[in-house]
Length: 280
Length: 284
Image (cartoon, rainbow over all chains, first blue to last red; front, side):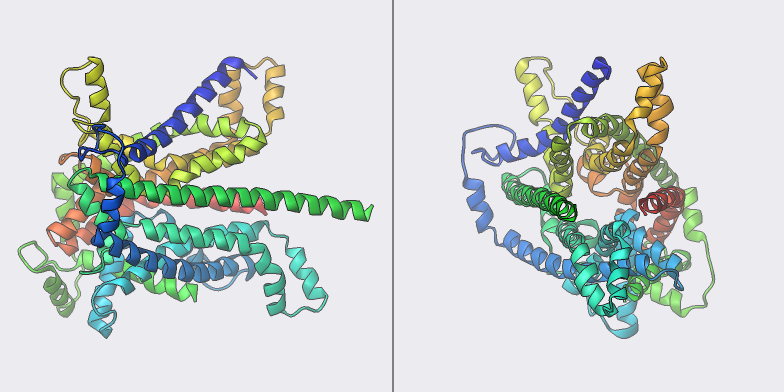
């Protein structure tokens, strides 16, 4: 291919990746800065990490966020998987178009709108039935499940769409009951997508600021809410330290997942080759 | 069950927003307690009233905010496309063993906190931030350049945050492209530039549209980026809604702002759903 153009492409790629990573790297470097002024280097220090683990407010918020994220991820995965199954396997049923629309709309809906509409719902529900009383962890969790299940649905659906339906049909022809087919055939094949969906839902909930601000109440400050109120006042080095820890956790997780997927792919390729060899 | 859930927590809330946006006419103005307004409006006869919308239309503040949001989102989308297309193209053309690694590298920022990535830019752009410190220590400038709290910072933040959303659909589209078409064009004497615009762009059009919508739609309603990086005069509609709701506590107007924003976004959302539906269809 044209050399000049490939040089251009490589330059743009390098620029793009630099653009994505330099801010994160700077964040990490300056978390080890001695000085309180985040942007003036004054020597290496880990004191902001110490300060971070003594900050009870941040720790409590992190705990609450973890709890909500875990409950949310589980709920969203169950609902999202069911919705994905319904959309790919049940053919045409009444209200399918509506479900499709509702299952994809939260993906693109601006967060301020989702947050506002959920809050107004909770307020009017409270007036009508007295539940949920006030806003707090329950309302945050419900709101998070609502928007993150859409992501799970998309992931599960695209996996199901590529799944060979003849596998399920073959099992049924051989006399397996629908429930057995589901647990022995469909579920194991879709499982990677379900796991990916769970992680995605967890991360979305863990990160969410805008929707949470609308539906949270006093005493239920999640980590992003605490960070946001701190950041609004300006840069502070313990946030840098916190960011570094979070980035490292995510990086380790992603790399592990990537390596695992690579290995699974190799195993599957080997299995296919062995099966072909056995057939010859 | 997911059906019921979505109906209850997604469809019904919209109806409520719609209702509140057309109610609260008599008492809906700021001096009154918003919650009470709303109860009263429910108690009083239901009468559809577009005063809140008329208010939005007449007040230049809101018109500017909508215009500004769309402009900001559009410019950011184009910038994302200009950076993202060569990136996706490059990734799709590297050796397969590299591809997964590079894709993971595109996705990694997406998995890390959005808020903290925006925060990173504050330290870089500030008056005594990294760029200004660097430039001043070399002696290129004497006075710091004001970068934080400008529209420039908002564009930068949006492009930075949403770039992965652009690169991934583009990559999927470019990867599927049949290279022999380009070779055939080159054999027939077509210049690379012309081949790019007559073959590559039309065939990856689905990816371009999907990526652009994935950036444009959330960018219009963006709140965090203009709140942290933008100045007080950089009005974006997400921020206006937020302030209307949290600071002015005017719920009917906030609802009307939300509905009007949705109306603006209906067309791009439909385009996105159309493109995605077609992509899911071709997978089968």
